[in-house]
Image 1 (cartoon, helix red, strand yellow):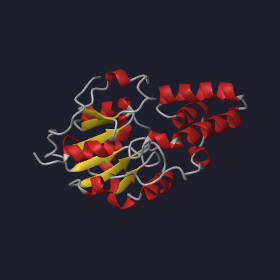
Image 2 (tube, helix red, strand yellow):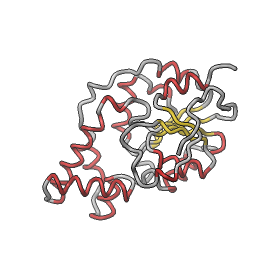
Image 3 (cartoon, rainbow, N blue to C red):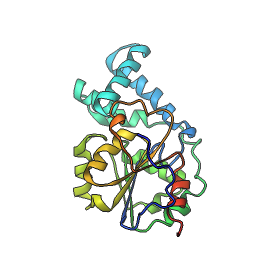
Image 4 (spheres, rainbow, N blue to C red):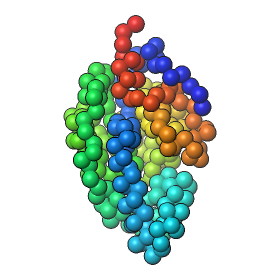
Length: 229
């Protein structure tokens, strides 16, 4: 999955839609927000299924790998209504998340529309964007509810996005921290950028990803990609 890491000469002249994942993409995983969510997911499963914390974690990670999200796994395997899950797991402390240096300026420089594509829900997404100070850049937040609770990386989630928001894949670039979520986007014709972290590369399906570009720093990538020749 080794791809060019220097985007300085990337041809983005055809791009008119900038599509961003939210968690660990627009902000750094060093904020550890998802650590809090991870704990609360385990707690929710333990209470829902009356299992101990060890068994709850096994279920959590198994469902994430097999169903795209733990939420989808609970819905498929246990006919669970999603609303209470989303409310519970997203009830976290956001104080560690601060505006990211250069992000507002980098987004301001992008020509065209900017959209969020997330497996989280709208209330949580709005809190993240507000903390980052960049909500005003985004035309729409396409969340898990809008996707009928079908998560990335399953193709129907991408199909609904394209239809609902009039997205042309060939002129869209998608930024995502989980490589397997780029695979359906690439198959549709989108340009893909893997915002690489340390935790997700072993997920099943990542081996099929061949992103056009990869980076460990979204802001630096955007700054370099938009520099004039």
